[in-house]
Image (cartoon, rainbow over all chains, first blue to last red; front, top):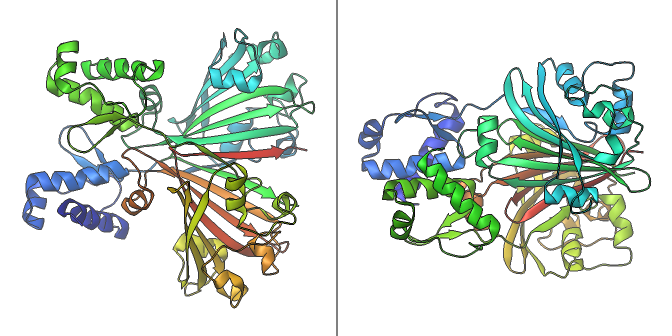
Length: 252
Length: 252
């Protein structure tokens, strides 16, 4: 173990044991220099290890703080944004979309900023929707807030020919007991989810207000009808510090 | 956009367009200073942004390189490590476990280092297995290699009373048509998967040889029998630069 690793190890233990708590400032460099008996450079190298691990964040100026985690939200992807199961859960309700309902049921306040546009979709979305090179899609781009803090970016893409002239073209929440696809007469019978883990782009970090060293999951759900025709591709960016992804599957 | 962001933007575009390719060294600081007309400090700040995004990695000494991604491996978690579906897939085969079979079917060479021990499991595992505070579990800890490169850490925990005296206590691949649980007479009928996204611990980074700014998914699968009794808890650490997680679910 190098001296820097030794310092990181000690601070990590203090965080784990609760002696250093979320939001608390780290001791100053001078204080740690006298405490550990190491040079300023070594202290900095040790703190940098914790910043890279995401346990410590750099504040304005010289301050370093123990990361304050967001209240974590668990999204159950086997029921969320899935036609049939959700149909039962919200039977008879009309307000809000599936995501908003799930958040509200948990006692939190959901809010979405929605913009709708007709776009040439990104290549990986075009491929999943089976569109030709110049094929157009209707994009519903949402920034999802919980209790006024940004939690996720969720962009849904629909082949233009499937949703043209429907309420999905309007920039507002679409509410329907069977989900947005059912609301325009489309029946999703299967979905394929792909999850990648990566660092955020600069733009994502800005939109979601991410501290340094905060990775994201990129969750791509492609929904199909009974004839294996792709109906929708939804790309959700989920910051790791405020989400847990859940699947519940019966193997019968 | 600051000057540093401008440099990062330009280099990002060069990576995207393929002018800078994986493994290639970035131009030297002096070269970029004359190219952009900015100070060494500004050039460094720009490059640091790309290191934080994981697009650039620092080599030995001063060198900075475009990240070389591992050949990505897609793990379908709806069939992998799941009793019933896999039973069909490997009917009549006996060699290797489910993961190894899946990798070999794809034309790659799987290898696992397995250690078996009786442990007090970590708190979140103990909770999922419904064990008392002093309850013991059999831990099968694996480092999984593909083509001799480390790809994942997979630790399975079984309540000791369920597997004591069975082949699961031996530190080798357990092969069985219906999966490891079936091999000891246990039938998994449901599983719950939880996925978190975070930076790796120092130990994980060392075991998996992770470059800086490489986040991981922590995938926790808890398997239950028909009476909702927990049979197994498997914690898999999947580095984002070499994995995609896949789920295929029918909503019927």
